[in-house]
Structure formats: C-alpha cells, structure tokens
Length: 153
Length: 247
Image (tube, rainbow over all chains, first blue to last red):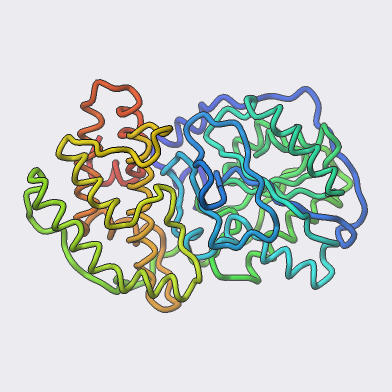
C-alpha cells in the first residue's frame, strides 16, 4: 500500500523530489545476539503523553515515553494529515509496539525492554534534529540499550 | 527515521529502521532498514494482529545480527491483510450531512452537537472495548470542539483555553479530536474496514466533515499565512482533497 505507485501523482512527485540528507559514511555498530539485547523504540510519529504540549510544525525536539506509560496516556500529535491514523486508534502497537516487545522479552527473543522510549516528529528536516538525536543516544546508552527499533508513520 | 539512525549509530547505539518509503531509505542509506509494503501510518502493518506485528519486528531486529552491513535494506515479504476493503461494510451509525445552512452559526452549532451526540454511544463502546482513546490534543470535550468549530466558521475565535498557543493551532487540534472521535466510533465488533472506507464515509456523510471543509476554505482565504498553511495542509488528507475535488 505504501508503494510509490499507490500514491496520488502529486504525492509521488513531492516524495521523489524531497531533499534527503546525505552521509559520508555509514557507521554500523555490532552487538551481542538479539536474545541478549536491550531494546528501545524511537519513533517519528509525534507521540506525546496526554497533557504534554503537542508537536507543531518544525519542532525538532523529542518526548520521553517511559515504558510503563499506559497506552491510554499516549496521543499522536504529528502535524501531517497524510497518513492513516485509524490503525493507531485501534491498536497502539501498530506504531509503538511496546506490548509486542514485552511478549518477545517473555519469549526470550530479545533480552530486555528499555526503561524509556522516545518520540520525535517527522515531516521536518531531520538535520535539525541532530543535536537532539545525539542527546537521545546518550540517554539510551545510560539505560544500556544496544538495539533501537525506529518506527516512522 | 533513516537520518536519526545515522546519528544514533554514530554515537554507538545500534539501530534498525522500519522504512515506509523505500526511495528515501535508498537515498539516506541508514545502517539497517526493513522496507515494509504498508500504508503510511502503519509501520507494523495490521492492527490487532499480534503475530503479524511480531513477524515484522523480528525480521527488522534480526538485521542487527546481519554481518553484511553497513547499509542493509531488506524488503518485508508480506502485505497487510487489513489494507483491503471489507465488502458491504457500513459504520454502526448512519446519517447524512443533510442540507442545513452551515452559514447560520446557531443552526450549525446545534446540528453539529446533535450529530456528535448521536455518535456518543458508539464511541463509548469503542473506548470500553479498547480501553483507550486518542482524543485529547485540544484539551476540550467533543461538545466544545463542535462549538469551537461552529464559532470559528461564524468568524469568531472564542477565548483560547491555552493563551500560549496560536488560536488557529488550537482549532486544528480540536478538528483532530473531532475526526478521531468519529473514526474511532466507526468500529463494529471485530471487523476492521480499510482506512479508505472509513475516511470516505466520514468525508462523504458527516456534517462534521462538511464543517471542516468549510473551515478549510475560510482559512485559505485568510490574510494570515499560518492560517493559510493549516487550512491547506493540516485539516483534510490530500487524498480526500483530490477525491472531493477541493483543489
């Protein structure tokens, strides 16, 4: 469904022409087997905790979502209206799959679940997020995270 | 997402990105990415399908063990089984937007509130079944969201509940809450229609949608650039703008 040919022509054109950052090198950090890794979620879905200030256009900051945040306390405040929200409304795991990672932790597929998870908002030039992304990396390392699953919308 | 992966990895944190737009992942080249053939907004594919979602996550996380990096971009082989239309689907409530004059503030406000009231039992059932709602960005009740929309269409921006927020931005969040209210209420038992079915029904059949479309025209005609931008980009999905001929 998210194949380029499924989008309206105008969307295809804007996606094809979107300026993407280029990187000189591609670092690739190794780690232990998956069953020994501590996993965190980082999403660009614009998720916030209920009561927090929603994201607005151009925001490059992030929100912390502790692992014990109840699903009913998590809202989506992404500025774009051009993606499906009905699936997220029915099942938070379709974007922010903490329950699924808990199941995988219990099954031993992953080692453990991080204490906190993070949300940015896409639809913004990611180069503006660099400093905040590096700050999140520092938090993740403090939590001994050695596997991050990044989920877009 | 792909750029964030670069920054995290440069700091020593291993990552794998789910990719919804393959072209962008090809351009940015994150260390590891799993492209999924799902609708935008659904990186894990099928809602309420635990096994499907775990297959996506497992496939993605296994790329962390891949020794052939850097810049691994793999494709997930399954489609989202819930992306297809449900034959004969209808929402649990049915009404049409009618022919009321939405230029009459009191008439519109009354009709919008009545329509929202008619949806309430179905939304309550959704919340009971799912133990959550995604409504809450505006901080207003649905009744107050409807009143705000009617007031704004009449050219009057009521006092902003949060003075630190741009009133048009606050209005946009009230519109988001209204849309979520209707779309959440459309669930019927375990049957999950495609997002396209739900969106088409909302934009074709409800007075709320008629009012939001009118609001869009109003904001587009505004002298304020922020109002224009929110009207153009943040109220109605582009696919619906195109389908309804609102360009």
